[in-house]
Each structure stands twice: as C-alpha cells, then as structure tokens.
Image (cartoon, rainbow, N blue to C red; front, side, top):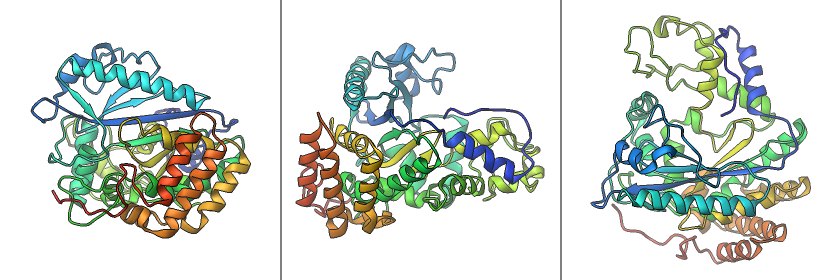
Length: 415
C-alpha cells in the first residue's frame, strides 16, 4: 500500500479519518489495471516447502519475508513475488493500461516462476482451497503470528484462510473525482455477489466445519473476524470507509505492546484503533498511535473491496489453470467507462449485498445466476480480445455450470 508515513502522534479521531480518506482514495483518471495471482505449493511428498527452500528457488526474486536483505527483483514481466503464511506463492503485477498486456505479462511471469520453483522440486498448483492438508503456517513473521493468535481466539476460519486458500485479486483505479470514486466503489460492491457466484470454485477445504458452500474460501473470510472483513457502508464511500477503518479492531502493533518481547506483536482483547487514539490503550501498548501505525493498521483490513489509493477486488476465488484471465477481463471491461459502470450497477442491483448467499449457493440461486450471466454479457460486449471467453462464461452461468464444468450444487466428498 502506497501511503505517507510519519512518527507524529495521532490525537484525534477526526485527524485519523481525514488521513485515511486522503491515502486510500487517490484522485486521477481511471486507466490502469493490475492483478495478484496466488497458487498453492507443495514438495514431492505433498508437504509444504520451507522458507529456505523458497529462498534457494527464487534467488534474487525472493521476498523480504524470507530473505531480509533480498533485492526482491521483479520477474521479467514486472511481477513481484511474495509468500503467504502457508506457503502459497503470489505474483503481484505492475499496473498496466491494457488487459491484453497485463495478461501476457502475468502469463510469462507465472511460467517463469513455475520453472524456478520446479528446479528446487517445488510444484505450483491452481486451486482456491487446499483439499488435503491441515492448515499449517510456515512463515514465522511477527505479523502472521499475531494474526494467528487473534484469529484462533475467534475460531478455525482464520488459520484456514491464512494457510489453505488462494485468490485472484484485481485492482482498478479509484476515479478522477469524488463522484466517480463513489460510482466505481458502489459498482464494485454491487456486482460482488454475482461475481462471487460466477467464479466460485472452492466447494471443498480441508479442515473446514461441515456445510456445503460454493466458495469455502469466501466462507473463511466472512467468519474469521467480521470487524475487519465485513463490507463497510456505501452511502459516503470515502467518509464511511474512513470511519469503518478507524473503528476496526487492532490486529497487531509493530514492536510489541509494553512489557512484551519486541517480536510479539499481538494485542489482547478487541480494542479498536479509535480506542488507541483516545488513550484507552496507553497502559497496554505503552504509547499512543502514530501515522505510521495507522498506515500499518490499514494493511490489516480485509473487506471484499479494499481502498489502498486504488481499489483492490478481493472476492474472487483463484481460478483453475489460466482461468484467471476471464474475471480479470470482465472487471476491466465493466469499469472501462462511466456508462458501463452505471449499467453494471443496475444489472447487479437485485443481488447487491447478498454476499453469504453467493458464497454458499453460488449459481444455484436464480437471481445470482441471472445477474452473473448478464454482467458477463455486458463485459463481452465491451471487450475485444477476451470477448469469446466472456461470452462462454456468460453461457456457462446461464446453464448453471461452475468454472470446472460441473453443475452448480454438485455434491462433493467431505474431507
């Protein structure tokens, strides 16, 4: 997240909210798109690779989470490599103005990454949920230890999300002015449930409590910590998001709380960042919050769409093979011009807000199926290279078929 940082103490809620509004919603003509792709990884015996295995395989491309002094060089197509807590590997693209260029760069970088890992006997596999292994964290970073500590207090879903799920994330520019920002923000949330249903492909997840869901990955997000994952209000996107962010519970404090080891970043209880500003945690943490603390707090919030200066769409399952190109092309097309943004919002209006229904039932639900097909039809009509793929996806949704070709609602064996 690109933000300003500072050591100045935050003493008022109003100052914090103003800061959030400024760093999370950047004004500028919307023209760029980016993506983050994730894969599960394994060793030849099916286990999880160790951090040192990744370090050897990635060399100068290794992230700082496993090699502190790494140059972290991007791959030839511009993508940066990172690791998730359970050993999932991620490519974060450079922003581009063409979905064709972005797709080509990510495809080349994914192929290069797969070859690098294979040389160290690490395999990459697409799949939004690990269906075989128990959730196990391999990264010892203080941030992830604090996350696991908090999420484990709530239930099993946080550890499952951290270690056993993967996503396709798409990023788009916020907008040229506050009106356009509001329209694009509301549209991304309005179409979200239908897009979740259209691309849900994680009906199984090892270790998940009983229950049939089209996207067990999204189920983990809904359950793990609602104060940081539930959608914020939408009436005033900038103001609502700022208020929601300040009221969200603290996940961790860098450097630790007063009296704890420096590498123990966990925070006891459920206090919000607002309570820290008001002085309610001074005796626990040992100091008040700074702008740098607020910057970091913003990285610990995980709503379906996150504002980071641009908009991160976080609600899509990782797709089989190169299937990630289809939702990427769909979002690029639907947000190509203001008229299409408004048309997409109108199509999705009957299903807006039906997040849990979409994740649980997917395309079984008739209104979600209709909205998904109509949105993909609209995207196809605004697309060039990817129009045939979007047409095929729309027809698949009309037929009630998942991205793997199975009828929506097909029963799966429990693990």
